[in-house]
Image 1 (tube, one colour):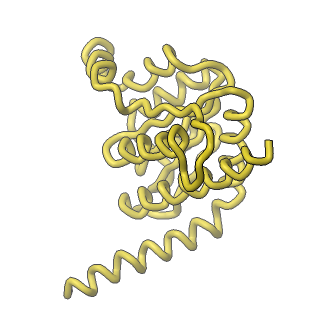
Image 2 (spheres, rainbow, N blue to C red):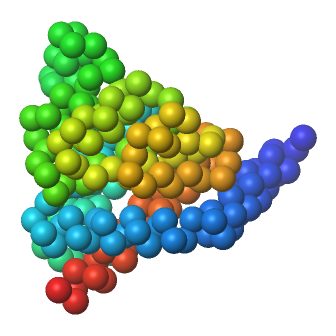
Length: 192
């Protein structure tokens, strides 16, 4: 296959997954945006977590709220649980890698906060445990998922499962969802 054909294949697959996502996820995306707005308006905080590329996306999305998205506005309370190397390695060493996010939630979150978990498989034990910990703390959860959602689909309050088995396509749509929701939230907060 020529390079141009391989490149086109990725763009075509991306477009198909985006259109499929719009067709099946719009109601869930509206709920996602509403929960983020409600959390921030009521003084709550957003927490983001994921592994690998999803960890990078969690950091990216938290930064959109803390710094800005497309327009200047006050900073909004968002924390990526993927960034503190000392905490991550201490929890991993002392309690096990599956506790790295749950332990941080225990220390940092309060009732009324919102946890957004990003996973292309929905099978990561550390994300499942984070969702379970959030439930005990009365923190709402949203899962941006792929590949059917895995076991995490049943642990979060709002599963948003991108209709694809491709890790790359799921991550691309997760970031698109994150940006679209941030735009809706920015517009909603202007009205408050």
